[in-house]
Image (cartoon, rainbow, N blue to C red):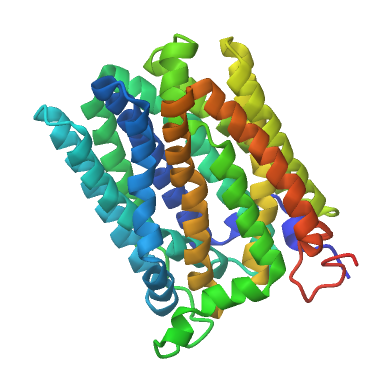
Length: 418
């Protein structure tokens, strides 16, 4: 059997116009999200000086995904995914505009901001399953691993440029940061609308409790998917230090807003380097082991970041965090796309987005509340140690996931070694 075109051509996904539009739309949306994240975090800490409020920023963005989990995936499986993504980006634009207005009028305070972030969370709750399900419909299966690598590159490029831009724009003025985010979200919506509607691969079934819960049943029955999703949940839930970066930038490393942007960008530098490498040289063997190794290394580098009081060591640790996280994300997202039937893809991705949200936004809440109780440095160190422990425990609990060899559909030969 000949080597697939995705392995021969590092730009295979971009041979499809629909995917190209999709790629740049995701990039702009992710860029804008990073700008908002940096600006809101710094402005909130400036206004309150309280680490607990930094944790609440994550909590209020996560709750809508949890509360709407039975709705968002079903919507993504039954309705036009392009339209859902475009509407969500329009709503995100409105949230950026609202933050702009609060700042201009001098009304920026925790609870109005939290209300806007709840709306932003609703937008992300619906957009996540739709955008994750739309991507695999825009390329043939042979090009899917290449598309996953480039998707991750898009996010990580935004994670590098966005925080730095957010810090610099915030230094000019928070209104400049929010105004730029508004423009990028709006342009992302235009690009999504320009994507030709992909052919439906399955006919939607009538809505019932059975169809609503289909995503949960599939994840529970497929141990590879269950293990991959839950590993990300608990590893990043414990290891996330992003919410505390305003504290490290201002109090530990004595940097300003530009320094916060640099810290926020550092993981993206490592991640995009690995993503670009994987786009050209995809993982051929021992994919499961690579994923667990990436999670463990993420935890170790988190501990180093927590212990460091020197800026360049902290930045190097964050770069290693991003690089190791990219290894696990690449394997996990590819497995999830390949092992999930398209007819339940939206519902499975809705559950996945709750897990991702729990690992990110709820992880920020965990970090913020723990930092409030025991200090930011200790909160990061404890979380990093917990991440290493999770990698070891999950490797033992999910042997099928650990034995995954190559990133092929489960019907392909050699998908796992017994």
